[in-house]
Length: 335
Image 1 (spheres, helix red, strand yellow):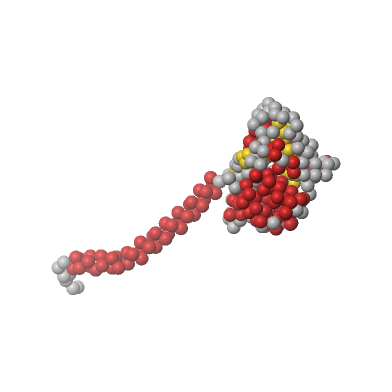
Image 2 (cartoon, one colour; image 1 turned 45 degrees about the vertical axis):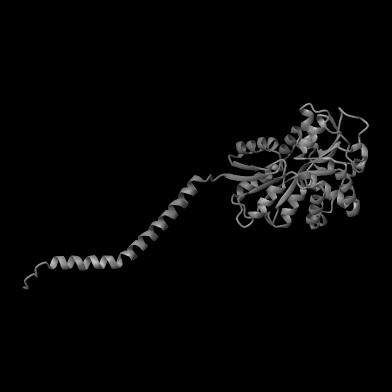
């Protein structure tokens, strides 16, 4: 048997250390990769565990004061948790529409609840909603002329065309006409009067120094307090102002009025498709419509119940002209 060389164990230890030094980076990389995979799996499991399995996300242009009680009742009846994102009064429907367009490749929302038709049709034309049974209408409210009853009773226009008369200078309030039902109404009037007649009316109205305000409720409130004689606003805002003791009255529906159904849609690729379908059906139900009518959010259950001839936009043409109409209104009414 060979005799062990002195200090050979030290040489062996050095050789082992050098080997570890060469292969250590590979072990470190492998260890990091393994930890990353395990960490991602664990993170996914935690997210799945924390995320409610029975939930639905809704973007709502309907006013929160009306929508919230309806959605809470849906939660109570179904056990489905509702997360609602509401729009602001000043940029009604447009902000939500833009958000849905931005999220089309990675939907964050399941259901859209609109309070007028134009933006819903715009989103449908962009394939934001599911392909089959994507959206529906329910109930209706209307665009109205509201007149103050605290001011000169003679200032009760029979037509929107009269608002360019000198008597109405500084006596008209309307919401900024790039958003919500005000924009939809004016674009429908462009079809009704023709582009030239509409542009002339807009310029004459702007020259008559109307109050351009942040929302239809503000316009109704100004009429209710006698700050202006006339407001171009929505029926639900007139009803709300009357409940608050405002002194105003709604003019009857006519050929220049626009009916505004509520809309509900399911988003294409909705993350919570089954819950979305339940909410989609629920909002179209008779009970919901009756509650919204009782609350003053809607005027009636169906536009077919209205016997008066009102504006009937060609929505396909209106959508094609949306950009040009918006630019025209912005150029005339920009504050």
